[in-house]
Amino acid sequence: MTARPLIGLTLDAEEPGGYSKLPWYALRRNYFGAVAAAGGLPVALPHDPALADAYLDRLDGLLVTGGAFDVDPALYGGGDRHETVVLKEGRTAFEIEILRGALRRDMPVLGICGGEQLLAVALGGTLIQHIPDAVPDALAHEQPNPRTEPGHEVALTPGTLLSRIVGAPSMAVNSAHHQAVDRPGEGAIVNARAPDGVVEGLEHPGYRFCLGVQWHPEYRVDARDGAILDAFVEAARVAARHAA
Image (cartoon, rainbow, N blue to C red; front, side, top):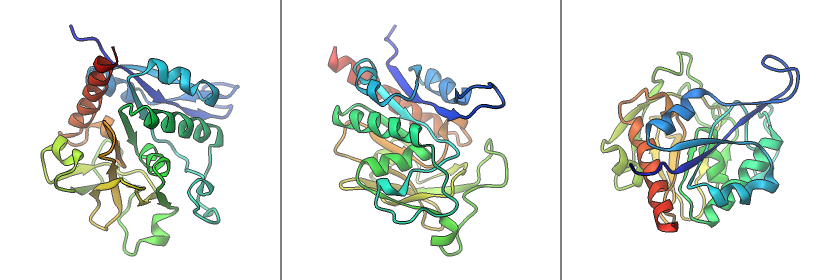
């Protein structure tokens, strides 16, 4: 049996209340389940930037997850912070450190939703701080229907890694974001857009596997979502084999 590559997943952080009277970490179970179903061995990564290299010494792939917060515009020269922007500074400090470390090592990376936005920033790109204020006639990117259902479709850019993985010109996706990638960064390319032109995915062909999607493929609202996780885990498996 082929060994499962070790996939690190970044956690969300919550203040006291609800689950615990003390600060706590959280992540939806379907993130872990999707990685395991794709053949990976998922592990959670607590937020300690000083441990980023030690984690990376052991990991074969990095998945940067989403969450109900935003990347600080100070990290990408975005100017004044929009009134809707919510920060989790400790989480972002860890995620940007481990993400940049993974890129330096050419480790396979997958960014989902906010993770895709952070990937753009790590690659030198910028973000739109609030879609309704920046995109005329924008779709409801914070969809009113459940996240287990599609919110809109995206068109995939022909010839991109994402297009080859999915094998179709478009996908139905769920949508839970008020920010989006503006510029994807030096050398990075846009691989998916919504009908209103909003960037829905990016990748960098200069890396072994460097992919970000604005939606949540772990929900599998489209039959092709599983292919994204499969391709990421397979890239991590190949990377681990070459490192052995």
